[in-house]
Amino acid sequence: MNLRRQIAVTVAVVSFLVALTLGLLVHQASVRQHTEQARRSAEAALESLLAAYSGTGMVVGQTAAVEEAAAGAPAAAGLPEELRRLAVQGHEGSMFGPGPHGTAMWAAAGSGGKVFSVRVDYREDERAVAELDRTILLSATLAVAVTVLAGVFAADRISSRLRTAARTARTIARGDLAARIGPLGGPRDEVADLAAAVDSMSAVLRSRLAGEQRFTADVAHELRTPLTGLLTAAELLPPGRPTELVRDRVRFLCGLTEDLLEVSRLDARAEPADLSVLPLGPLLTGITSAGPPVRLRIDADGLVTTDPRRLDRIVSNLLANAHRHGLPPVDVRVEGTTVSIRDHGPGYPDDVLRDGPQRFRTGARERGNGHGLGLTIAQGHAEAIGVELLLDNHPDGGAVAELRLPAGVRPGVEPPAGQRVTGEQPTRVPPAAHR
Image (cartoon, rainbow, N blue to C red; front, side, top):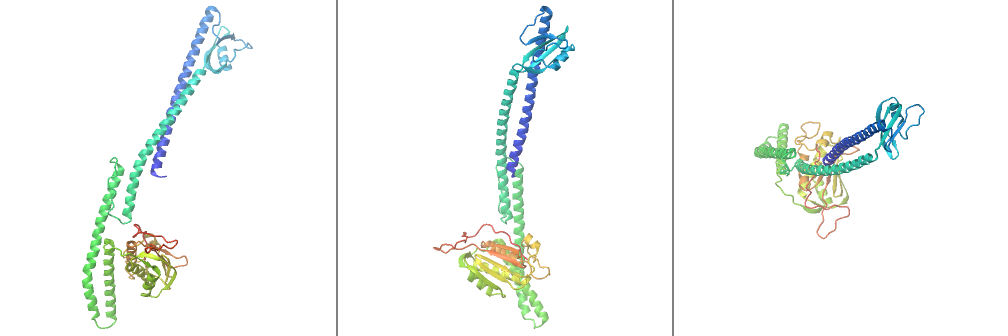
């Protein structure tokens, strides 16, 4: 149940309980008032009967009656037996009982061996109470309906402002740190404070991330020149095992520097994608033939909209990852606009699948084997050209990387059945895990 429904239900329940409580209180007060009024009327009539009988010896009124108090004497029609016994004992009292036209208020008293009783019809009072109950029910229903509508309206305004803030927060979470919630309208309340806090947090994160990106780029640029000179100097060293070790480490540092520069360019989105419509099969054939051996299988070739240079970089990094951390054979399968790469190693660790790409975190149990930027770069290029990169473990063992490319259509050519056609590139690409 969303917030709007929660508020509406809460308002409805509270309104109903308030209306029910007030209705019961008014009903009880009305019943008590009519009961006391009927009781006073019956007692007044009984007093008049006693006074008239003591003066004239006559019974005046159709609702009055006098009977003998002796046992076995006939009782007045309708007089409650409990009230008659009280009068026989010489007491005076009143109570509800049956009458010829419905409920009646009876009053009785005993005097001189006789029982005096009078009856006051309660039918009109019952009608008045019933009419009041109907009025209360109608008024309570209208009040609850109006209150619920007002609550729904207020809840909708709050919910709408919160949804706006949530959409912007999700946009920020996808990496767009320039997104801002801005003024939401309405009062300066907790929702406005939340929006201001999210905007402030986004601005701080953007500033810090920009600083880290500049630092990474600056470090890579500063290291590039001396490392290039160091690599040249290492090539001039005399042959030998120490020379090979130095050259290997220098090459590693040079590769790391180039990867850092590429990550910086991806973070800055400095290079626009050069998209074109090409068949996927020949692209993969050329990419896979330039590296270590793989088993390429093309089940169905499809046209895709992609940047060949960036796709080469993505697939090359995935293949390097499979060869470095997995076991042969490495299978590459093309099916329409989807490419899957599978090795037969231990698969991705759970924390890698759960947390996604982490720079300088390889996911390998051994240390010093890779620097964790390969799949980070692959994911960055995938996002730039609208490719969905998904990583998982195969049920039979091994890591599986799947690339889902946007379908491409040449002018004047209908797209193949079942292929989806996109624009330049989608606005959101789910994060991929890496090793």
